[in-house]
Image (tube, rainbow, N blue to C red; front, side, top):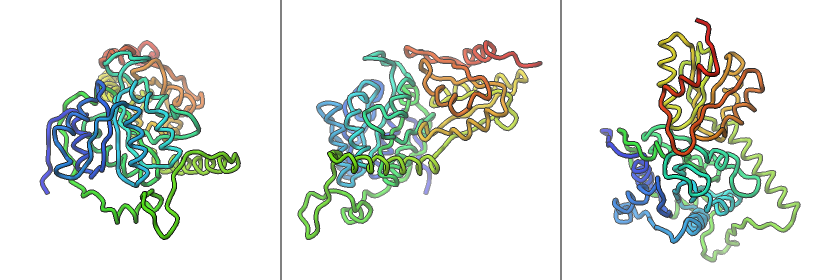
Length: 362
């Protein structure tokens, strides 16, 4: 079948991909810089073509609780927001994780703290990778760097969510959400039938009396022994995810003497800076985490053992650098380059930062 190629924003690509994946429901609330996801879905009116429910809730809190309800029935449901809106959703996200329910959550990050700015940021790294809400839970976190990945990670996100019965967050920064690029749209997948959902999701709540005891999903457990067992089971699941779902990309690492680490749009800026540095004879490589959790700690450790130093570049005051420092185990110096307030650096700033920290031998 001939590829369907379009020029669109990252946010628009998410909406198109959601329809084509066969998503059952989207529940959201507008906030810059991710509002195009909801707007595009409303424009495309998938309820007339695929039967997908698209609902603008009265608030972010209402939207995530609609996701909680929809996910409990085995449906493929999703929501999207930007940083302050994700903060409002955190209680519900913790419930979804505790209930071991599949769901996709899009965070198109803007600057903070507080209401902050509508400009791009990567300052929600801690919120996404360390749980954010209450309790010992984890989100699988995907970090797209292109519009193509914004589209592709919708399907990947749902596949992982259902595989592990765990919420997945696509952690995009405002640059990737708003930029326009060529994208190959995924093929259509038919929405699952009620029979297929019942077969694939035997844990799902049907809401209908049956000859057997109906499923009940709750995150409340008053018995501390049972609560600890539930947490132990969750931790075992997270261990399995950590062993099997780490994703990353390496550029110019075969011979690198220095390493730059970055995710999302900043990785693209750093790659251009690295290409310029290599023209000057400086052997620099790039490691781009695709999964921020599980984090590619082993890959960091292996590269750290052979390089003279690492720079972690982020649109924040220093968040992923903590995971890099833990993974590198102090075998090489680790430095940070970051911009805050919504200012996107250019490659020359990365190059200047490199020479500020390192003096390569000529």
